[in-house]
Length: 512
Image (cartoon, rainbow, N blue to C red; front, side):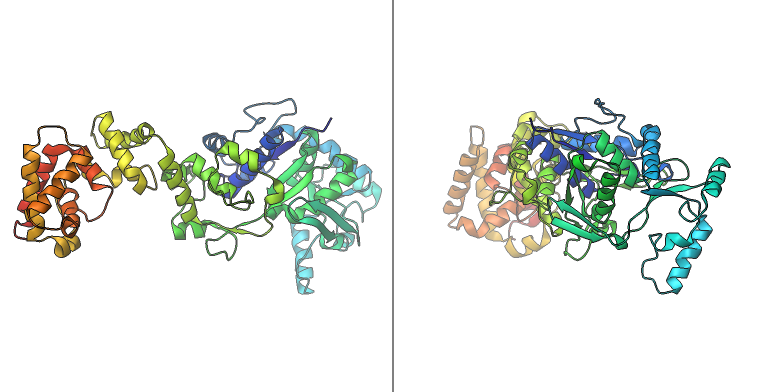
């Protein structure tokens, strides 16, 4: 019987969840569901100095909104919790001690001033990347250089210390990454990372290895920025005797700026006017609000589809996938190695596609909610008709009302550029004749009848309808472009049309 697949998303509660983190969570979710496994969420809050109130709830709410909630988490406990690292503090020390006893770690008593002095010496010696490593540790204050009785005395006296991993010299560390293939690193490029801090809390490197092992994580799917740490993690699995149960690694490609030059940043998002967070985030200190995708009008299913394609593709020409279809199609093997551009126009395209797929009654709910904000009420049937007409021209739900106001409020002014070019005596003549025909109509106006009467009016005036059509639209809507005009006429009804024709003839002038 094969082992159950268990993957995890392990964010730190240091602020809003970045959209790159959302993609990581999504890929973990897709892989878990594809393989019939479990998707875990673990809050990595070992660095309490960076903890931000509300961040954990934000992560929970964002994943729920997107429909990718974890199977196990701090708010949905499984059997291998707790799921906050701060609640697992007592677990880590024993593994640090195990590494010490095996000679794979050591105590370091160096003060911050001594560490700074070491870096300054190395910088002065033109060392490019000053590190606490297999060479420099021989000149520092640690249990490798101090006599055993002095180490014991320092520990007994309660002197502050950290526990560092002891990286070997001149060894090759190899790992097979499911995205990048074999990765090989020389140990002399690695430094002796701190595993346990002076406050007794583990660093990420120790805690995530221990937690992944105890939570039986089988696959670590995470961002490319963690690839340089992977060799250390491989060594820790070996040193702790867990090499046989080491998870498979998959390091995801970077999200790049819209022009493809460099990693996506907050500055890029601000420059191009798009969000970097799934939902609005209010900074608890400054009170400043960073707008999110949800609050800009992106639909969760559209955002999910967009994010899935930032680094992965199904191997064919399909672009539109429901979440269930993504689960069926997803494979780690189809994740690319190279970074992928964050094309916000593509995100908008996805939003348009999903907006158009929604039933008219759902779209009408968006519309009526916006109307209610302005104290306006319209019948449900009319709201649905407006939504049906406007959805082909909308990118966001708010566009239904923003672009469709003319179907509730008659225009009080007209686009001057269109009026100067298109309004003339012929247009006025056709509209006046059209109003007469509408007056004589003894039934409800529908789109077909509206077109027939307008065609007849133009013919009787001896004027080609195509020549005045934009002017007719201008007279009724105030602008020169928009949705199907006959559908608009049906929604407005004959009485409103007659009223608008009268106003436009009076305002624009009968002779043009």
